[in-house]
Image (cartoon, rainbow, N blue to C red; front, side, top):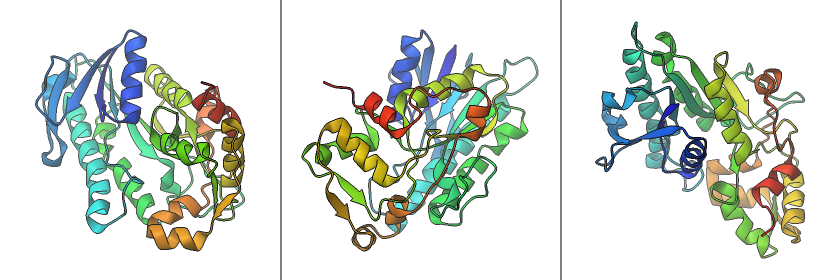
Length: 302
């Protein structure tokens, strides 16, 4: 198969390119700089521009583009970039795929990144599934607009799979690469009272979901990509300490985090109780279904 990947240089994009290459697939990339090989094509999503030659022979387009959410403070400029980098890239690719979807042209499947933060940071007794309403906080509304930007592809009949993804854990990158440093030094810290649900998924399962979605012609619409056995921050903290064989005695009070991080702190302290209802109903089997197995897979012994 031939895959077109946007956002291919980040943690997830790099892991996806390696996995696809190992499986014998061809990967072409959308890049903002000048292309340096025959497998790269230019685009400028802020101007709605995409080299249509990039779509030739493509079976699956994967859109992972978007500025980091938790790596910098949410200044007004950063908030605007978080939104525009997602909406503009998705809209540009969706419109190009819609124009490409013509009679006699092989259809392209769109695998569109999204986030479980769509549901907000206040949960009830029952977990959120794919039919649950969106929250009303800033990041929830970013995700609502992000997903809506893919509508031109949907309207043109492009099979579109929206992957509402939890933080993906692996030692090679992402949040876990940063967290394991203080944990390894015995500075593992529980956030707040630790009772808040904390969605997450391992890298192997995340890539497995992408592979499943690409190859399953019945897959379409939104899917929550998160472990099927939800965990809390306290359980995560304890499990990570066990895997790393380090103590986890510290606590970060909620008021301290809110003072230091502002609105971003709610993403750490808020309760996000989510399950992958549609994936499990479709028969997808997670190789690491709980927090302990996810961390052991992400941090194998050296």
